[in-house]
Length: 193
Image (cartoon, rainbow, N blue to C red; front, side):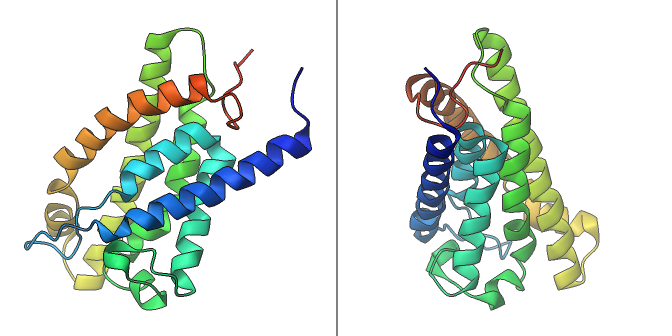
């Protein structure tokens, strides 16, 4: 028996609120790197999970809620900062990309399938695509904000983080795949026909 649309929507909204809260709760874990204004955080890890587990709608919605809560003053951003000044500051481009990244990861990762290798490839590809969107938006914004070339922006806002974000991907992908297989209530847990 399949759950009703109302049940799926309610669980999806609860999922979105939960992942917005988890992303914000880990914002205090911000490791500064002295060559860049962008700290290392766990936010990207939770964007990966939100996109895979929540699918495009609820993965993207969870990150939209996260950004909006931070914008209205809840301490959701790196270092438990908040407000429009953070969104309009040097790291704002990354924040703007989070909802789109969650959506894109959900689209590419698809639903739980029967072929584990193909599922792993789709999940990893979705996470990489989401990361590319975050980097592109963040680097363009950071470069414009600091009046740097895109190459200089990439050096301080992207290159430094690639190894860390790839490690996050390697940790997040198997967790996300296992969770969506085991948690049948998730919006993307049903087998794609």
